[in-house]
Amino acid sequence: MAGNTGGHGASTRSWLASIVIVAGFTLGGVALIVWNWPLFWVGVGITVLGVVAAGLVDIMGDVTEYGGSGAGGDPEATTG
View 1 (cartoon, helix red, strand yellow):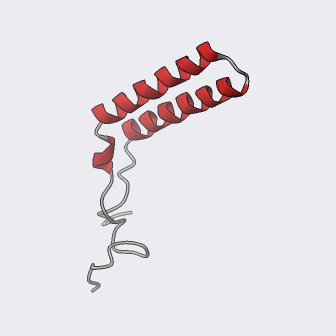
View 2 (cartoon, rainbow, N blue to C red):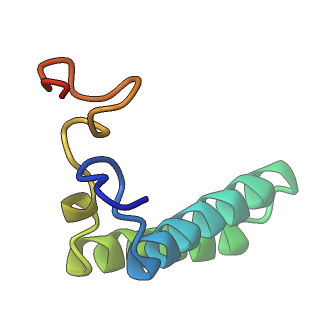
């Protein structure tokens, strides 16, 4: 959308870091269910790598305080 100045930047790097974190967390959770401790620690390692990657790509820089001036956006924004 042109003119949208708020919300998530949705950069590919940020999405990739998020996917790595979720994949590691999911792998660790499945490993706990099947009682496989080595696989659990692999999942923990993947999650930690994803968190480090998220910090390196400045994932929090893709987010603004408010999601723009539309519905659910900046309550102090003036219209028109």
